[in-house]
Length: 464
Ligand code: GLU
Image 1 (tube, protein in one colour):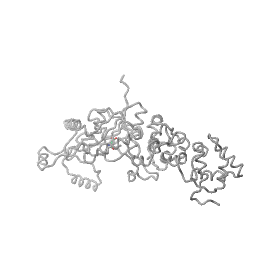
Image 2 (cartoon, rainbow, N blue to C red):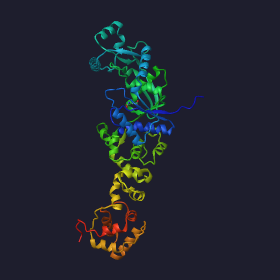
Image 3 (spheres, rainbow, N blue to C red):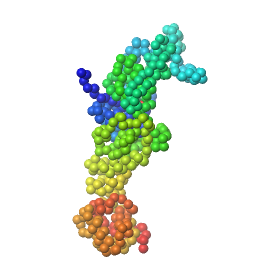
Image 4 (spheres, helix red, strand yellow):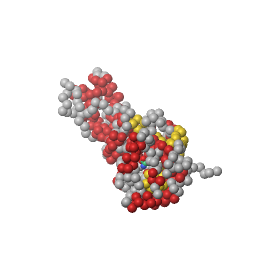
């Protein structure tokens, strides 16, 4: 019996921009799939385009993935594998599957326009295959350098007469898929300037790194048809494929224009929790409601590729912001203590438990830290009432019961109840209209601090 296959997936960004909500999706789906299946996750940097690839962006991609907890089991860069691609190119040339073409972009463009004008599909006509050795030599003598195309296996007799050739696969998200190779141009795999193109490098890497599942956006569906043909030409088995739908905004519009502001860097600057971002993105395009998750393992445990719908996934900033708040409400102190120490030194567990339910982002804790342990400007609406409340303020030690005991005493001594009773006390003690339960805040404050606030004569005009 064959040994059980070890699942291995890859996330393959091109370092030409920061990661954003759009390409975070394949990163996360691959990562969760690997964890769920007890498999391996490869981070592969697709940097064969030396002009456009930036080392700083490769580093930023790694930093963003690390911030989210998307660790990788192995790492590869295409720019370090040129020797290997050269070998494969020679192999494909030798088997007649890679052929040199000399058309300039202008010539190709004119030909495409003529085809369209004649109602023909704009597919490359393989004219270069008919060049004689002399014809080729002549072009090279003119200084032309060839680019190299992969001869798709879409013909029976002569390559000049392609016939319908379906390449099919069972897509783990989209179900049965078919691409007709006769509808496509032979893809360029090697450019005039010697640059290897993604279509080839990706297949070579998927073979060499024993990738078992390719999970990527549905904009690659046609590529997959072509790449399956390349796997075959190399005598390799193709991996399984899953193509997820693309993201749209909450209004159904493409997100492309907004992606800059939806970068992971921007999320981080906005103070979003990495766990909220991953929990939100994991739920996108599924019927699962976006819900906080204890950690990445919990997220992986509830992950199924089959939960992903074929319909476009809708990204909504407000839903993400709301999930961030809900995520914080459930976060234990131990999980934030280090970061809290940096943004709000002195914030401790009792404070965290009292106020986490009122935070939208972690930094929102600062004013509550000041309320409990620091200085604020109390708002005194009714000085006489505050003085009567002070008169019955219980002695320390205080507990969660103290607020109830105190306000009962204030009610008894002043005859006030409901909002009339509670609101002026909240304003005096916290300086703001609303916030965490007073019952939880009060025992964290000292009696001296509370007394001082009740006695304050601040800039606010009193109600009297
Ligand atoms: N570098 C490719 C991209 O970012 C990778 C696609 C793939 O997963 O094969 O689109």
